[in-house]
Image (cartoon, rainbow, N blue to C red; front, side):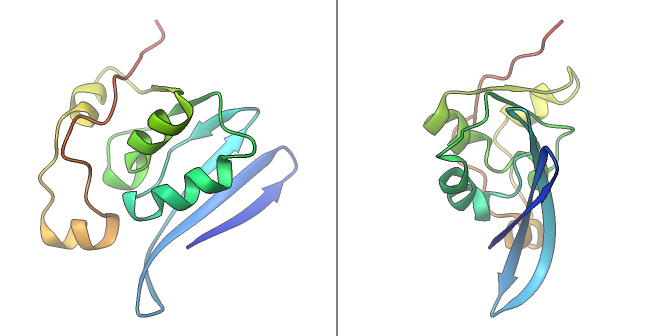
Length: 123
């Protein structure tokens, strides 16, 4: 489930993972002037892509590597062809295929079985 809130020029996508109606983990991404900051968990990736369909981001940035910040990278790159930026330290971690322990898989979802994207880093 995704809740959308607007704060002047900033749109917040508050995403949750719930089991039987009980929220177990909230994450958020922010869209401002065509830039999406963090993409959330893979559980809400398809829903986020649908919400962004009318006005897709021009690019995205992952603030750091954690499953709750990179989970929709693969879908957004596939659907919209956007470039996704990250710090040099995060790029190798984001591009690898993570093996998540069950507690993280249950809250954040499963990352696709292929490298998600070719990240760019603007020098």
